[in-house]
Length: 152
Image (cartoon, rainbow, N blue to C red):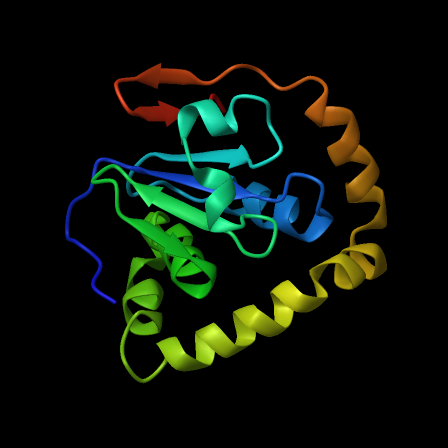
């Protein structure tokens, strides 16, 4: 997996009803930014409008990232992209994207994805309730051309 030196930004489509997924989203948003990142729950009414065909990528199974260059990444590669968006974690993302660590990241991501609902209930139960409440108060995305950015 190759990560470019410069990029305009990425969009991350994730399970907005999963406490673990939302906690990851919040953690990424607290990090200093290397480039813009927009988190969009795949259940959001505007998700399919922003990304026509999103449903065919089965975002309920694993996170999906679309770059400003319209490249699509799923699962572990999507997680690596999220990490790469963090100015302080780009070196770690570059190592994870390499041929030695990416297969391990893929395996770990599959295990987490397969068990995320159980892990969410175990570790993020109160987060799940907050997520449901927030879904009803989501602000619309600001879109320019084919790229949308969430407001902090």
